[in-house]
Image (cartoon, rainbow, N blue to C red; front, side, top):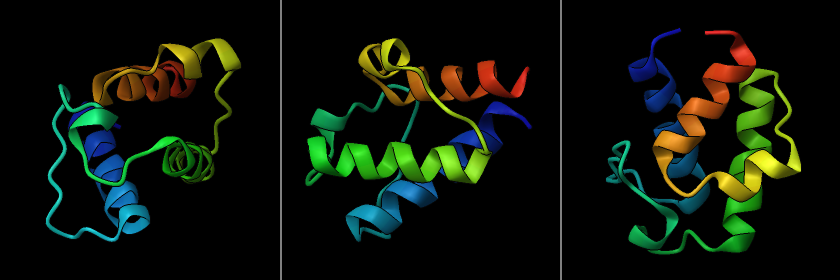
Length: 81
């Protein structure tokens, strides 16, 4: 799976959870850049991504996920990409 495919999937999950079909994430996007992406939404996003990619993030990983790039890197790591 390519980075752009992972980004596309992440974007879809975030759009669904935040109820914003117009949202277009980039690798530099952070939760503070997106309305309604708060700590509760973040938990839902991460849990959904874990299910979508059939992976589990560790607590240390979650603490270091500050941008969409960090999330993509984490997914790639777990997928062995």
